[in-house]
Image (cartoon, helix red, strand yellow):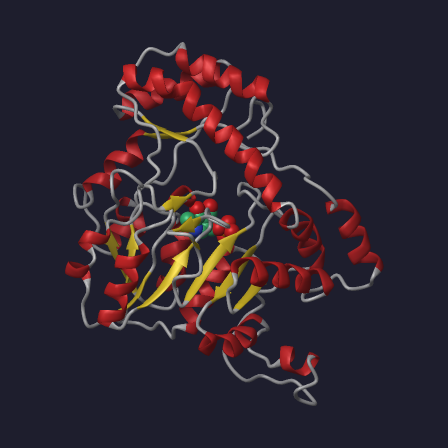
Length: 379
Ligand SMILES: Cc1ncc(COP(=O)(O)O)c(C=O)c1O
């Protein structure tokens, strides 16, 4: 992403990251589950009011833990939007399950809940909604369909930390949910994630799976006198150095949120007239959603117009990017039966969406320049 005067993303510091990392080193605990990991767990549990939050090395790994916790096996099916990142599907495919893709709504770009019922089969084990851009999916419908068919809900909330649906935090609706702290997200630590556990029945096994299949967490709490191999698992816990970085960001989450809200609103206000006159759509936020201000995107009228806008901005030193090649049209997706035309909204959106530079340090001048350049573009 270098070489652009105005990059798409710029991961930065918001507070005490460097002091906390130094402190973690000086404490002599740089492996996982040190004091900064506990602080992150406590903060997430307190703010989200979830049963447990466990830091992981990525959202991808948190999703893999979900598939293990739900005992996903060969022959199982899970419903997942085609318009998402590969990890949302791969985590379950790794355990042998078959993705059943679902199209998205043209307004929020979230899975279209009206299409859910017809995709349910006796093999449906999980529904995996993605809160695209941190705008909540229709969780009332999704959770009631899941309850009726006995499927579990795993919310991929990579974009939506501290956003809400009808007043309740995203990530607290499904039995399980996942967060990302990758450097492109709102709250970051380079690479990182979290598993959010809302159904207490999964908490003990989650600790074991995260600690290489051992009961080491119980050992550290003094509940057993030695630890040993008790289940499948892997090494899903991050170093406390990353947790130290993350804690410094998490404790500033409200400031980060207001900064991003200002940036988002400036784009929305500054581009609305141009968009109206140019056949371009801006993000739609339903009244039930309090979004996370994760991204600002434009939906252009065609693939060709989008390619021209990307080039137009590039010529001015500005990097804007597209998002998500539909999973059902990827090599793996085709292997699972995907074919062109199957999910028309996904295909259309994927051709037309462009994400504008958006990060916590985007200066008013740079943002003004991005908007000026866009307004100078003839669609
Ligand atoms: C919807 C979604 N889920 C999962 C991920 C994977 O996150 P991570 O990089 O933390 O593994 C991403 C990455 O951007 C994403 O957009």
